[in-house]
Length: 187
Ligand code: ATP
Ligand code: MG
Image (cartoon, rainbow, N blue to C red; front, side, top):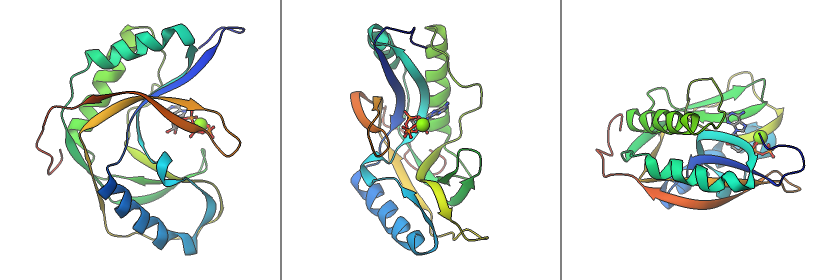
């Protein structure tokens, strides 16, 4: 955490969708909207968080970037096939029952490197999820499910979360390519 008085930056590593994935997600959200009322996340904010660093001193941004440099990961594909409501954070998420080996490997490698560099991370194991909406006001007993969305990923980024009036806005500071992987099956 940043010490009081020092400039702090709120950072996380994440994967952003390609255009085709975003189109599939938009179609899914269009189908969900009539039954569900909440604060829907704008499409440009859609992402999968790999590691959340939280608030760190501004001079540590370079260290966080060096951690990204140190990680080698493989491209892959995640199949998002479950709409879930998570009560405590009050969020509607899209999750994956199968997960993706390459994405989990990347999250674990990042967490290792970041912890060795003295960044404090959550202890909870990584679970790939896309936050679709927050602060749900109306939700059916049974959540509507629909066709799985395929999310190919070929890069990951270090992102800054900047507080704004209507939820944080995200600025990518650096992007790293992932080695060409299988991009199919469990990735
Ligand atoms: P806001 O908190 O301003 O409403 P936000 O949650 O989108 O907006 P951040 O809190 O900066 O923005 O979070 C950035 C990303 O990191 C989001 O994907 C969020 O779900 C994730 N995240 C936030 N806090 C944690 C945490 N403690 N552990 C793991 N991931 C987190
Ligand atoms: Mg938050």
